[in-house]
Amino acid sequence: MNLRERFGRPLRLGLVGGGPESWIGAMHRSAAELDGCFRATAGVFSGDAARSRAAGVRLGFDAARCYGTVAEMLEAERARGDGAQGGIDAVAIMSPNDTHHAYAAAALDAGLDVICDKPVTHNHAEALDLAARARRQGRLFAIAHAYSAYPMTRHARHLVREGMLGAVRLVQVEYIQSGLAVRVEDGALTSRLRWVLDPRRSGQALVMSAIGCHAQHLACFVTGLPVARVMADVGTLMPGREVVDHVSALIELGNGAHAARGAFTVTQAAAGGENDIRLRVYGEKGMLDWNHREAGYLKLALQGEPARLIGRGDPYLPPEVMAAGRTPRGHPEGLREAFANVYAELAQERMALALGEEVPAFPYPRIEDGVHTMAFIEACLASQREGRWVAVAGSPAGLA
Ligand SMILES: NC(=O)c1ccc[n+]([C@@H]2O[C@H](COP(=O)([O-])OP(=O)(O)OC[C@H]3O[C@@H](n4cnc5c(N)ncnc54)[C@H](O)[C@@H]3O)[C@@H](O)[C@H]2O)c1
Image (cartoon, rainbow, N blue to C red; front, side, top):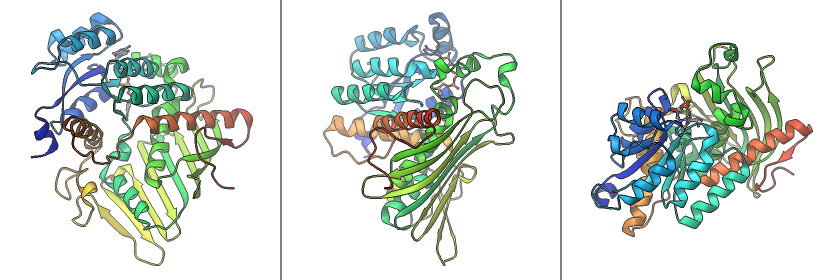
């Protein structure tokens, strides 16, 4: 019997955001349920109470569990108790960025685990606050950085940890999109664009809230190194734009004992781009190359040897990497499965804790990762303002 079977039931999930028009909402719901670890049972699907209830019914939820506000959901679900039709065990947050902190804090304070989309908060102080609340309440907190939950990015991390590359010397990470390569601000604004193009709602630097946080998290996850210092160029590729659509930065990664140099480029304004996230890690002995267009493969090139193309499902992969995939070798998997890994790992951790069993060390992104991401974003902005290298709060020193 696996952990889920020993636990006896799926965990019950309450959703915040992700109404019928939001593609990430369908991603969260289907990913949460993919492995039977969660069942989405309740939700708040809009900032408007009547629209929220109507949207939940449209999505097929029990009308009695489609709520008008998050406070109402937390109160009513708590009152359901813990029986067969009991209240939610966890909350998944995929509403606009400016709502994340308040909703996550309320869910933690109500004694629930949280899966929160990125950016986890608007600033470093709010992220620290959520980390403290999660610790105080003994709650689990996952962040939906799904790129670090692909089997092949998990394997890249494994190879770095095993010393396959030797010490990491250089990290190149990029995330290139084209959604802002035209002046969307001059057209009809959808409800999504209204909050995205308002810096008070989307965050201190739009491109970092949208995709830069994923790129930084992936680089740190695979190398095992936090970013220690940055020298950043923060601005716009599109002339006259008010929100930030481009950041390039020189970065130093370091954990005190070891440091590496790096280059970080993210933009949503590169005409012709798709969803091009790519990571290259160069060590003393060789390099790893992963890109999202061929997410099921990882290139490993050791100096002086023929390059190898490692594929998801290859029989020699370690068990924890195998466990991050579901279908046999050669069958493509993608973002939904990577999202599902984040959900399934948090759920299994909660189930193991509830059963008093030993908890495996699952590598899903946690609130502590979000604290570092928010410090990194603030350091990039400070570097742009001050025109100098800036240390990332909380990181050990990088290169001397
Ligand atoms: N992890 C990823 O790869 C990824 C991808 C896309 C979006 N996102 C994140 O998901 C979040 C939503 O982005 P989106 O593109 O779906 O936006 P969106 O505007 O398309 O959808 C937002 C949804 O939240 C609802 N909503 C708005 N205010 C709310 C409130 N106060 N309470 C409850 N629900 C509310 C809206 O009705 C809508 O259904 C953002 O934080 C974004 O960063 C993450």
